[in-house]
Length: 153
Ligand SMILES: CC(C)(COP(=O)(O)OP(=O)(O)OC[C@H]1O[C@@H](n2cnc3c(N)ncnc32)[C@H](O)[C@@H]1OP(=O)(O)O)[C@@H](O)C(=O)NCCC(=O)NCCS
Image (cartoon, rainbow, N blue to C red; front, side, top):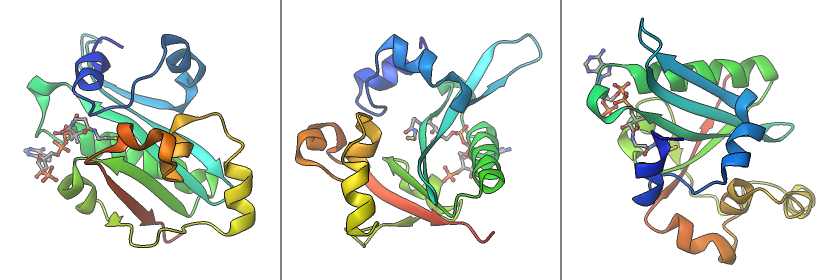
């Protein structure tokens, strides 16, 4: 939470209550050094049978450009494959970083069929609302780019 809060203040990461971090702790991968100091973190949130989101991915500002973010992202994508998810969504300012990992900017504004859309509307999760591009969360997503990765297997 300490590492996330400056990024939340800058609106790079979505604001979350402390309880939401604890409730989603099993979604997270973390990177730490030999002394156990936290260097980065990221989460994979499953939304539907074939769809998940990479969220809250960050590495410590003083340790960027050393492969920590890539290792975390690849670990999360490995987890997505293991779970059988075929598409991974992200909402980000770091377009080049995600592009280098195979993500493409979403052109399709209707990424799910109407039945699934209706089901996803029932979710109380803000990230799902952002994925659906709902008007009420637009202030959170301003300037971010919606990207998606299609996993091969
Ligand atoms: C996006 C973010 C997680 C990347 O973390 P990172 O630890 O710097 O990631 P990496 O080091 O793997 O990659 C960063 C760059 O360093 C370079 N790099 C990767 N491994 C490297 C290594 N071993 N040595 C030197 N450079 C390396 C890459 O060229 C990469 O370039 P790219 O960003 O243009 O792809 C980080 O910038 C961040 O925390 N941003 C703020 C939070 C955010 O916007 N998160 C995304 C929203 S979910």
